[in-house]
Amino acid sequence: MALTQRLEFRQSQSLVMTPQLMQAIKLLQLSNLDLTTFVEEELERNPLLERANDEPPGGEAPVEAGQFGDGEESGGQGDGQGDDGFGGSAFEPGQEEWMSKDLGTRAEIEQTLDTGLDNVFSEEPAEAAARNAQDAAPTTYTEWGGGASGDEDYNLEAFVAAETTLGDHLAEQLSVAFTAPAQRMIGQYLIDLVDEAGYLPGDLGQAAERLGASQQDVEGVLAVLQKFDPPGVCARNLSECLAIQLRELDRYDPAMQALVEHLDLLAKRDIAALRKLCGVDDEDIADMIGEIRRLNPKPGMKFGSARLQTMVPDVYVRPGPDGGWHVELNSDTLPRVLVNQTYYSELSKKIGKDGDKSYFTDALQNATWLVRALDQRARTILKVATEIVRQQDGFFTHGVAHLRPLNLKAVADAIQMHESTVSRVTANKYMATNRGTFELKYFFTASIASADGGEAHSAEAVRHHIKQLIDSEAPAAILSDDTIVERLRASGIDIARRTVAKYREAMRIPSSVQRRRDKQSALGNVLSTAMSDRSRNTEPA
Image (cartoon, rainbow, N blue to C red):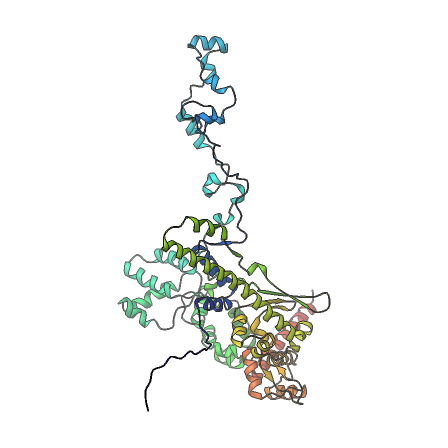
């Protein structure tokens, strides 16, 4: 077989991930907050980008040449600067002639003014006048140190005090409780380990190793920290937190100690076992449980913690006049940026270096691509949201029970896009509807087959049906998972028992045994309260 060399032309197509395409994909999956941050960074980086709502400040006329002219243009003398620092044009006609006139001697001036000079010019020194001006109370926000002039720049947030955190509150008490540097170091290390709820990790052996201190020293400092305000702070578990608060109230007796050590039985509402462990009667155990409920299981939550960010919807869905639904984007979440072509044109005429030209050429290209990517992002979100509303029309009209099963492929095929694009659009995006605000991914649910071979049911609709069955059950007839399966099949939903148990646990609904205990206990409390009220009303006056 002979080997030869030859030239061939071959034409092929391939997808190349250009930086602009990667940027568009990145913008598509950003939330509105992340998008705002990204655009702000681009505005600082790119000199050719500007906000669409940027306007020159009003009320300030541009300074033209000759407004503060020299002496020849304004008719002044010398360099044309008066005592106020402006040109001669600041004087009224005739003032210059009056200032240059020789007024004569002191006697002539007093004869002209018909009074003594002491009555015209005060003998108070300039220092005294300046001191009086400083002693005067500030009358404006700027004089108090607001930093900006004008009432429109008044910032109320400048007067808001910083929020005290749990760590700061504990550190203030630490500086008073300990004087030894070693104990303060151990205490500060433990305070840094406290979470926002006020709890410490269960094992502090690693803390002793890192600090090079003995376990007894760490335990001794911890015992003092657990007496700090708020009561219950620096506990290692819920039982210890409640015990600390009960000691503060002088209510930690042996019966209460037994109750605190068996909180798992209290969670199961096994009152009979608790009554036996504590050695008390029904009335005492009810009072003890009431005291436990009045305690604070998370003492650190009343201090400043991470601020919750308000969820801002990206899409609004409103009823239309024709009976349909009107879908529109939230304009407040869409950054408005423009490319300053005028600035680029002026720079291109003055730039002489090749490096500067290439820099501004790249800046113009990046700015243009960013504007296009933002516009394409908005169009894609609107297109996907409109298709979701069309597919889930029953949900918006009748509620969760009519939510249809939907997947990404169905929406992608309808709008002729790829599934990955739809997945990026629905990430971190929210839709405000007449039934609340939902994430776009909420409308994509798995399908559950129908028992009679009809239309499939949405998993979210099935969960809603299960919750309705459990909420309407009577205390004397608690529904087991098997009973729920039978009722769902009677409604045309073919579902397995393990699926019902999985949905129930996902909604944090306890088992049938636990629900029976809870409802019987609640019913018993209601009956005992009613009996006590009746006996109180029948007592003789």
